[in-house]
Length: 425
Length: 168
Image (cartoon, rainbow over all chains, first blue to last red; front, side, top):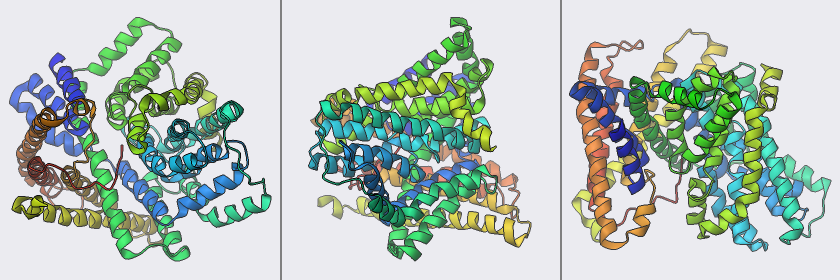
C-alpha cells in the first residue's frame, strides 16, 4: 500500500498528468496484490469506469455551454446582470457574481469558469478602475457558484457512482449556490467604501432591466428547462443535457442566427477534447479505486475516522478538513471518484441523508480549488491574468471565509440543502 | 518551422486532424441518438431499447480517441510546480522522463487492452448482436494512438497552441 501511495504522490508532485498518475498508481497496486494475473483488470476497469449512461450528461452540458458561448448568449446574460446591479458601488463586481449564477446553467466546472472569466471579466473590471488582485479574487470566488448551482458535472459523477438521485442533487444545490452568491455580494458591499470601489454613472432603471431581460430571456429559460425536465421526471439527466444542446442550438441558429456549420464542427471538436481530458482522469481513477476497494481501504479509513470520534459533528468536521485539503493537490473529478466510495458510506453510518452528504462533498471540493497556497483555480487565474497568487489569495480571504461558512452551514443544517428536494420530489 | 517539415510530426498532425473530426462526428451521433430516444419514447412508441447502450459505446470511443488529441496538444493537466523551478536542461530532462512514463502506461494499456478485446470475441452486446470486441477495441486502439502522439510530442520543443483551453 505504501508503494502505491508513494508512486501516486511522487508522480503528482513532479508533474505527471493526473490521468496518467492515477493509472500508473492503480497498475502498481494491481501488480502488488496479484502479480501479472491482475493486470488484465486494468484495461477492464479503464473501460468500465466510463461505461455509465449518466456520464454522457457531461459532454452534453459542455457542448451546450460551448454553443451558448459562441452564439453570444453569454454576453446578453452579462448585460442582464449588469442592468440588475451595475448601478451599485462596486457594480461590476456585483454583476460578476450575478453572472456566475446566470451562467450556472451552461457551465459545470469551476476551473473552466475561472479560465474563461479570467480572460474576459477581469480585464473589464481593471479597465473600470478595480485593482487587479480584487478583480481576480471576485472572479475566483464566483467561479464555484456555477458548479454548485445545477447542472454540475461533479454531481453527475457523484450521483452515478454512489447511486444517489442526480435530480435530487441538482435540486439540493440551488439554495447553497444562491446563498454563496448573496453572501459574496454582501462582502463586496461591505468592502465597497473601504476599498473605494468604483461607482458607475448608470442609474437604476427598470426599463433597462426590462430590455436586458427581454433580450436574454430565452437564455435564462435554459436552466429552468433542464431542471424542470429532470425534477418532474419527464427526462433523465442525460436526456435533459441532450435537450439543453438542442435548445441552445435552436436559439443560436434559428433565433439569433449566430452559428455556421463550421462553428458547430469546431464546437464538437472542443467538446470531444475537453471530454477526453476529463474522461482519461475518470477512467484511470477507476483502476485505482478498484484496487482501493480490493484492499478494503474505504472500510479502513472509515474505521479510523470512527476510532477518532463517534460524534457525528466531529466526523463531519474531519471529512470537511480532508476534502478542503485534497483539492489543493489533486484534480477534483479524480478526488471525487476516489473519495466518494470512502466518504459516502461513512456519512451514511453517521446518519446523513445521501443527497445532503453529496452536496456537502461536492461543495467542499469546489471550495478546495481556491484554498491558498495551491488551489487549482488560483493557479489558473494567476496564469491567465499574470497576477501573483499571493496577492489574489490575500484579496480572496473575505470571500473564502464566507464560502467556508456556507460549507459548514450546509454540512450541519440539512434543511438548507434538502428544502427544495423535499418540496418538489 | 523546422518541425513543420519533419515527417513524423506531419503524420502526427494529420492523424490528429482526422481523429478530431472523427470524435466530432461521434459526439454529434451521440447527441442525435439521445434526441431520437426521447422522441421515440414520447411520440413514436417503437419500443426501441438500443439507444442507451449504443450511445454509451459511442461515448467511450469518442472520449478515449480524444485522449490522443489531448496528448498531441499536451493538454492533459498536471501540477507544474517543479517544472517552474527547473528551467532549461533540467526541465527538459524531467519532461522526457514524464513522457516516458506516460508512454509506458499507454503501451501497457494497448497491450493488455488487446487481450481484453480478444476475450470480448465470445461475449455479445445486447444490441444488434455485435460482439463486445467492437466497444472493447476502443481501449487498445485509442491507447496505441495516444502512445504514438506522446512519442512524437517528445521530439517537439514547443507544442502547438492549445487555444488557451483549460478544463477540469
